Length: 77
Image (cartoon, rainbow, N blue to C red):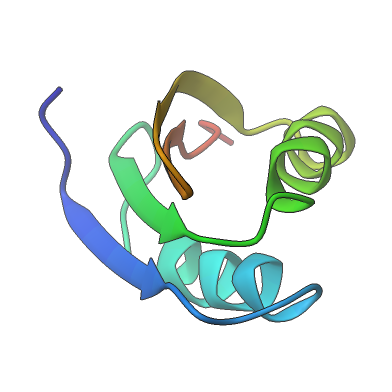
């Protein structure tokens, strides 16, 4: 999947992957896609809840062993 910015949150535990995601989203334009890589298994639930609460769209979630890759589309205001 194409993306505009990548954030590496590997090795970080909650809430740091979400905080890195928020910072990354602040650096992209509306409707652009942020790729976030995390190794925290709890991040799956966290990113789903984050997107519901903030209005950003979780486009795709890929899992490879213990690595989770999220593609999040920034909401258009």
